[in-house]
Amino acid sequence: MILSDFSEYSGRTAVTGSEMAEKRSLPGKHKDWSYVTKGKLSGISNLIEMLESGCPNGDSIHRCLSNNKGPWAIIAWKDSILFAATDHCRSWPIFLGKVVNSTGSILLSSFHADAIRQQIPSPTLSACAIKQALRAGYVLGSNSLFREISQIGAGEFVYCNADRIHHDRWYHFAADKRQTKSPDSFHEMTELVF
Image (cartoon, rainbow, N blue to C red):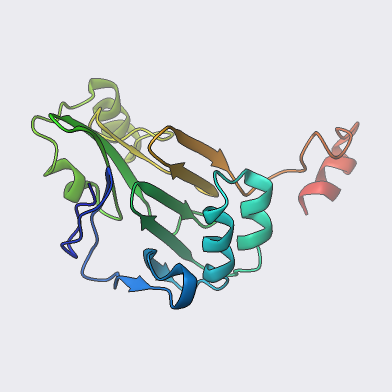
């Protein structure tokens, strides 16, 4: 089920929007896809084309999204497929929640955690997350104050369909160890980073 501020229902996925994110659709053969973005994002048609062929990996998402400079975030959906991604510094957070009801699981996605919390019948606070928020002012990793709600980290994406949820990183902050040898000295490390 798609549950959104845009009153659109389909599949087993839910997208809750915000007043600052306008729902859009693509023309032509991808007209059944809807999406909301924050910031300026190009290459959405290429991204949707890739999503049509199934679950993407981090490298393919990187090729598609790495040309975008500046802050952005996207949530795209069609039937029971949901895709959400953040830029390399997570300028706008995206939250995910899972609700199990009589018709099956529903995955919720939003730019606002409270929009998801309102859809969960009885959300439970995480004692560990509360301690983190009180001490540091934020919650670490993909956790949130509520156990049923998680968030997508900087440079990460989530792809969900009826069969699975795939969470991966599309942006890597340091050289990928699979492609380069690890630096042997401080000088080599600073060359990689700067």
